[in-house]
Length: 331
Image 1 (tube, rainbow, N blue to C red):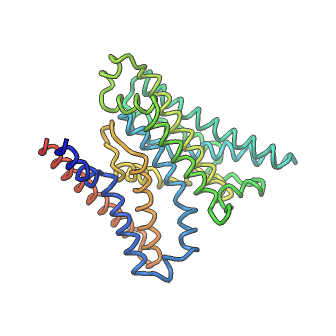
Image 2: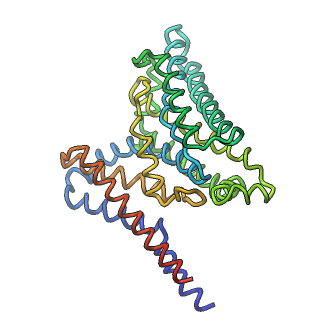
Image 3: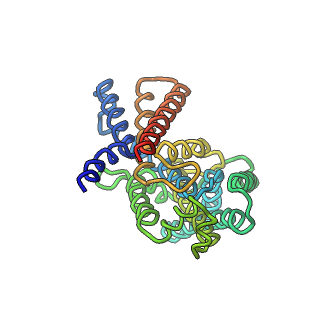
């Protein structure tokens, strides 16, 4: 008993999430020391709070799929398609003189519906047809992009009701509303993935679909739900993006696809599936946001920012690999 008790603190310290937490604290303190009068201001912190939720929600949408052993390369175009179709509904009803309340309700419902349909299509192709997730979602990504371009003709959809802009730009008691939405998504994702039978099934599928199938779990149904939830999360991110930009276009958020994969992996999610923690992904997103904001304050070229983020990702993966090797050798 004594021996096991002595090992617990060490295991806790060496966990991927603990490593990320200390890295986040270190980077945050470093930025505060280097630029206390600019970085550590309410204005800058609030600015980060407006920017972080979109990447955070995309990262959680990606993480969920990766945990199941898959990949969703269509997340940004799912959000774009939801934004464009929802934007068409918003602008059309506004032009027709309909009230802002019914217009926004119809628009939001359209966002969620499109996210649901895109997720369902991905789920059916992956789970029922059996196409590899990366290839399947690469194909649907191209499909969604083509539909977006066909609707917009390369332009942007605008003309939304003024009240719709509240979702991406308003604050409640000084807290940006997008951050409130993100916190709600984080809490829901945590209970869904780490505290529910569905989450347990998802982890099992990520470890071994065959063993999971023999255990009596409906793998196809679970995978369909995984991609549907991912699609709905993308639609939520699309609401925040289109509200913040006051328009919808297929190119909005295109950089988030690779960033979301980086955040999920940086957060400790096993790229092969079977492991991943919501808190790890959240910490990774916060690290990326702090670095991006800090380097922007220092006037450093955004391409250098990408280099720095890549270097940190490699560093964390190396630390996690060494930590895992030590744990394996100690058994």
